[in-house]
Image (tube, rainbow, N blue to C red; front, side, top):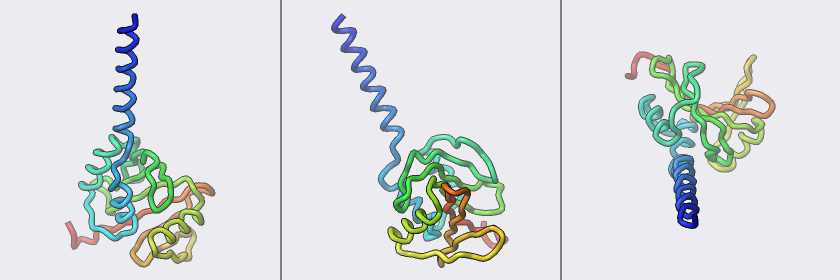
Amino acid sequence: MSRTKSQILLGLTVVFFMVHAQAAVPSHFGDKVENALACRSEWSTDYWRSYFRQYLQAPIRTWGEAEWFLAQDAELAGNRTEEVFVNVPESGALMVGALINKPLADVKKNIEDKMGFGFVQLAGPYPRWLSKFGSVLVEVGPEQTKWYCARWHLGNRP
């Protein structure tokens, strides 16, 4: 009976470490995604779809011309992230973004403090905040903010 208990305990320990090893994003994840969200890096849809699948597994949904992935609570510029997204290949835009469960003012302050750039509010019926690099913040709800970078296909890029 003691040997059986030891084997069960060993099996549970192995399963525990396998699950937790798969759930953790690599140390470079935050830096890479922050640079994309800040519009400070070039990217391709294929690159980000592959990158997110490699570290976050399959998308949880396809919505709004984007594939959405659970972000495994990755920290991006001091903000714990709920989900990340990338455009689908047939979209009219190249887009990488994140959904953060915090008010826009908190997210904005964290990004400005950690990354050293600011945002200005744009006028219009759908308030947005824009950085000089093209990074955008949008309030999705009182406790949710979307942070993204987008480039639209203008016919002069593949």
